[in-house]
Length: 323
Image 1 (tube, rainbow, N blue to C red):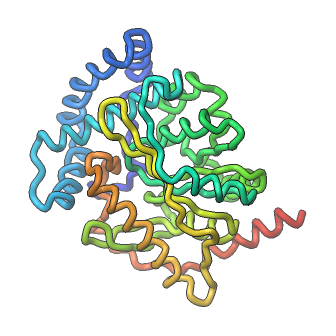
Image 2 (image 1 turned 90 degrees about the horizontal axis):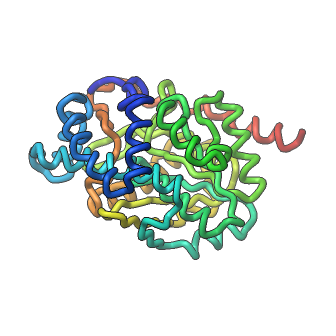
């Protein structure tokens, strides 16, 4: 429970994921969903750290100890959205009911031609954003994804949709390459989607309240938004059960400002606003939370870092644009 989320091994393996994919695609989504019950039981019994993390999280949400049934429901919800990634990539949204909220507001920001940062969290299905690309093929979407964290799942998904894999910006590359790739995509007017609730090892973090307790959040997405000076839109792909999803887009800021002379308070305000929206959707759909580790890191004794480390980001982008 005290380890970093990146240290946790990937669930399953290449053969297990291949077997699930084969059964699901040949037998249909109904048969695939039948597999979720033994998979849920297996992970509940065998993955103790994830089980404890679920119990801890659900207790924070409901204000009382979580029952085994609630924890298994939580795991099952995650398994269901993971399975649906296969069908969304293989067949698009034809088997799903996906409603949208705030799409017109998102399109207004895209039409500015400066690019858009879509910031999400590990809630629901980020893969449901693919429906946006299918409905608006003229809107370029790039997704930031760490391919090294889940190599077996990444290989499976890229085999299903090679064209989608080509639009991924690999977050496991060095920071300069990732930043410049995002900047280039924004200059092309693209939407760049990334999850902003987890910090990588050795990444600068700051704490803000979530469910009544300070939790660590990475500052790099907000420093990136400040450096790029592009609109920021929050996005959530909430799983509603069955084959139903809801894509929500919430304009956050047309420009993110993080003044050098008051950087820490400015970042704290941005993180607090972001965490408030995460908490809103936690209460609306509590089983959509897919951070299966000690998100709050209550035993973390680290102090607030000095933020001057992030200064080279804007300098690097300025050099790239002038070259």
